[in-house]
Length: 396
Image (cartoon, rainbow, N blue to C red):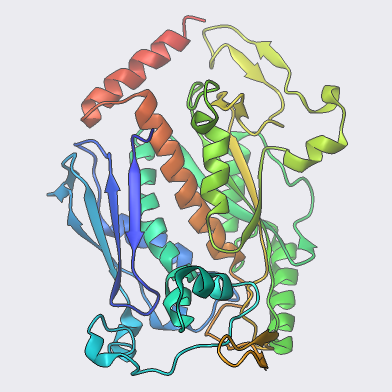
């Protein structure tokens, strides 16, 4: 069951990307400018490809908002593809232009190309690569920006930072529990060309990307997404598909090129004993912050599929971009002869951008859980429910 639902459509070189976000209550302030700020963050990061020089994404709100306020009806968003001018015939919906562009017949290793043409019975790989392209994530970021705006009105903050590109890691601890530290780390990351809060590591990451560019290679990496200000009680333990950590893992894993997702300490927990990783529970009294608290956050803010009041921490691993300037070997789907895989304009490293996309996907999942918990048809109703719940928690 979802309180919040969204859909995207559009191809990489088609006319536009479109999105629908359903389930946003009435009375929330939404603007194209706020969405565009998030879109600019997605387009940044050292190592991005030529497409970013063409596109300067702008979100046009088509429906669901009047005079800056949500109506409670589905919100429609449009992002035009500026490169469409070069593809009007090649990506036209009109059958009169069929065959205008030579078909792509050489599947690229690591992409959806081969599996896609076999599954959908296509003779032209472009019918697959256009939709499987990470260009689609621009709309996810736009819709996630709306979710962020909703959550921010309840002091829920979402951010991210890069902790590794290739073999270069940020120094020191890669896991933080303090909301203050997380927000400070995020602020430092926003000033880095690779969105890494460690200045020295950022420089080494840039040099590594330069090396990959010269070699015609690509790089992956690891980033963290955090959510602060979440109350106890989002998600549920009662069914597998209601667990908050399960929903977040699925959402982040759905982003192109993701190959691993962890909540909290994640895989490191498997290397330690139970006494080393469980977050002990303490109580400080009702007159301060919420009475129950933890000194550690190895669980990453979720226990039993339910938020526990600590910052939510998500870590994801992105594989290197599979499209290389130094092509890998492949086989033509028509002739079955070996060839060097076709090159589509691509990034060398998109880890900083992927982190922004993961913020958006996390925001959409968290907003869904938030609205499910404090459900209402208007901002005022949700606020009443939220305050009543906080008052209830303060009794413990």
